[in-house]
Image (cartoon, rainbow, N blue to C red; front, side, top):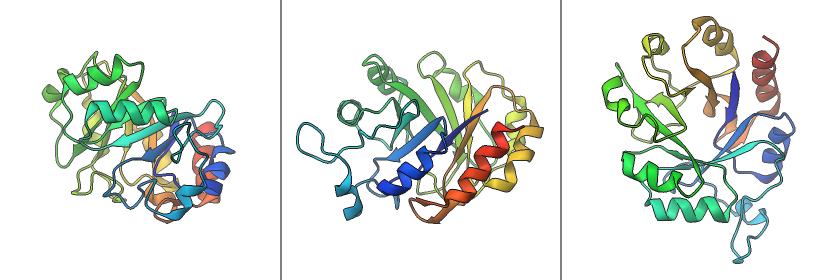
Length: 218
């Protein structure tokens, strides 16, 4: 099971989490998020890109870098991913299959997120099959994630599709054993964010270390 740590921003914290070698790290490019990468002056410490702006082109080794977007124009998603050396675009809004295809044909992998409340409409997801690399299921909130709230993960036990997915929504250290024991079909990995935080965008390193250890040592 892969590990994605999302909502990263503070430079030293990024380096400390990277040292734990998660499989993916997520950076939020949605300006209404409390974890928006350019919200604070700390973002100015990030290395400059060729155009002179701020950049997320940190050397994270083999860790996949994911940019999180909400209803952003595909052309802007592509520009940001290219400028900041991002491997994946995670689309967290109401993006169409056409949007996903437009981004993917530019060599950028796509994770399409879906918000879950009391049920999952698997029929709705079928049109995205073959047009994205992964799905992601998160708890439905007005803020498009990062709420620390969980949905009923048992809804995914009857998952009927071929596209593999990430499980998200209020996942903390004490949830890993439960998730593993659910034996969710097609689950690529977990996406952890707010339950690992000291404050928005600042991860508790020991909690993050423990979460990764629980997954890797099972």
